Amino acid sequence: MRRRRQYKGLGPGARLLLDGTPPKRLRKAPRQRSRPLFLADLHRAIGNHVVSLLFSQLAEGARVGSSKTDHSQRLNVDNATTNKGKRVQRKVVMEQPPLAPVTMNAASRRAFIKKHNWGGTGNRRMASRIILDMAIASDAFRFSGEAELKSDITKRIYTSRYMKESQRRVKGKWGEKRGFGYPFTSPSLYWGPRVNYRAKDYWVPHVADGYDLRVDKAKRRKIRELARNRRCTVYGDPCGGYSWTLSPTGKADPYNAIVKLFIPQYRHKRTLIHCDYLVSLVHFRAFAKTVGKKQFNDRMKWYGVDRIELKWNAFDDLQRT
Image: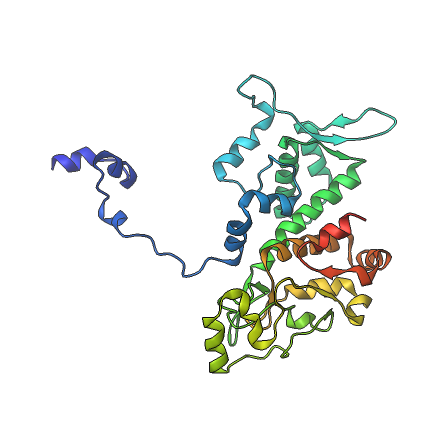
């Protein structure tokens, strides 16, 4: 009875701290996933901070997708001070020659978000978070005008959207469909790097066995026994570094060559690539959506469709031009 009164009004965590004995409902370990999601694998492989920077292109110090507590602290950034008593710097700078550059304060940022159409309430909220992340980043973001700033924020919104889309799961007649997965990793254990089946006419080289189900028991057993970097030898999949270039169909329509890679498919027909490839590809599609199909195709033709290569740093090559 004394122990009950002692614990009255306390949660299970407080009880654990008091006597070191967890209550019954805490003694059982939480159920773990048999395998982490692809996005979780991505974050674990190259780091949450790195992923945030790659997806948002924010300067070091801006954290995208942080905790609820951290986000609530950022919402009050304009009234916050550092431990030295200095105001937090606001670093979204609008250049307007011949006048001096103007740093956007909280009021001007809110007015900017309210002024423009973002395509829905969800996108508007995301745009507000993005411009706030820019404001508290360690580097300055300089824009030649409102059009350039809006385009930059829009690209970041699409980057977030397509990263989520790449993880979308769709229930199919014969099982689960996804747009992407890891090569030679469950549930696509028996299949190596490949582009999406719906994009197969847009990229070369083609899959060696034409997206076969690979039901041969002996070969499946051999794949399971081999080290991951040797599994490619069983069916002739790409080994080591791999990449694809546009086919004649892809050169005529680079936009759809990118978009069709995201279509959910069964495990042997989905796009199977590694983390860094996906980061680059999501950035590529966000750029395509921001400028639109016609302008994207025109820009790719100006850049040189023969130079487009789907590899781990494809978008970096394009940005350097």
